[in-house]
Image (cartoon, rainbow, N blue to C red):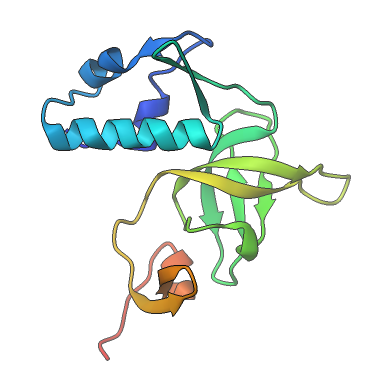
Length: 167
C-alpha cells in the first residue's frame, strides 16, 4: 500500500512510543518496497527532528512553532499556510521559503516571524507531507551538487485550475 508522510505522522499520538512493526501493520506495508519506503521515511523524519527514536521505537516531537497546514498559493508566487483549527491565523509563506511545495500540498511549517496587528505571521516550509498535484513539468539543471528539477510555468503550477497549451 502507498502511504504519505501525513498518514505516517497521523499514527503518532499523544507523545507515545510506536514500534516500526506497529507502523508497518497500520500502514499495510507487506512487500519489501513499501517496507523500504517506510524505513527511509522514518530515518528522514528522525534526521530533520520531526520524530525521535528511543530504544527502537519512534515518538513524534511536538513543537509549538511547527504547524501542520495546507498551502493556498497565488499565481504571483506567495502562499498562505491554512491551519485546520478554527480561529487560527493563516501563515504567510514567501516564494523563497516554499521549498518544493506547491498549491494544495499538506506541509509542516515553521514560524519565523510573529504576526502583528496588520500583518500575518510568517513561516517557511520544513517538510512536505502530502502532494496535491503528483505531476510537474520541469527542466533538469546541473548544479555543483548534482542535478535539480526546476519547475517550468511556475505560475501555472501554483494556480488551482490551470490549462496548459500545446507547444
